[in-house]
Image (tube, rainbow, N blue to C red):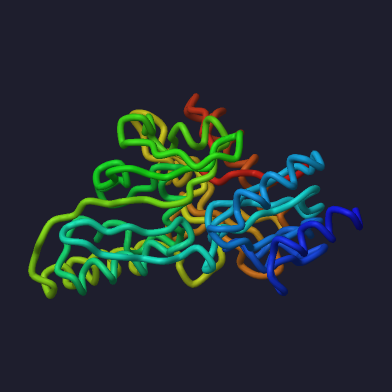
Length: 301
């Protein structure tokens, strides 16, 4: 352990490596036990960091903003590599925006509107990063990342940076080849179109109001807990099953939007997981529909 720490210290700058770091500081659920190593490399040091961890056979978990994760109370064995603010550059050229994976979608949306570019409005309220959005083909209000992405640079299993076109990324509902192959998204180029800045801003504000009125944004959560089952809406199934407000410990099915499981205060990861499992079991029993989690489970449950 001491040897790998020394080698990582030679690659990373001071403050970019934390040991036994509580994951409740890095997830929007505000739960999760400690990670053995919590690393925050730059774009330049990312390949070497990943390579070192693999050389020492240390399991690697890559995260962005932690907005779609449920980390167990036992934490994460191995290393968590954060693609965050140290990899968040955004640049605009004509009708395209190039953003590193750590840039927040909200920041990219604001950059777009200030430059008179439309097409990114749907993502303005998604509390995630560009990398996470590309990995899971994030979407909202009828738009998805696949609709605007030109290409993405990814770090493959051999530690090499490769460029994948939109078609090569094999986008599907909340998935891509990156998620299937455990690659790491590094950068994305988005193609938008010219529009009046105030019109773009107004659309962003309208969507924001819709979110505020319909989603429990005042509580820690990971957004929609379940994927949309074909032919159904997860939130309606959960509500029709009589589970609105169902709670275990500090975790609860939101009355405001039944597709959300929230941390109403003091919840553990086990509480949240228990609520998710109860919802899945009840909906399956009553309607014969198997709800799949949109939230990614990390650690032992």
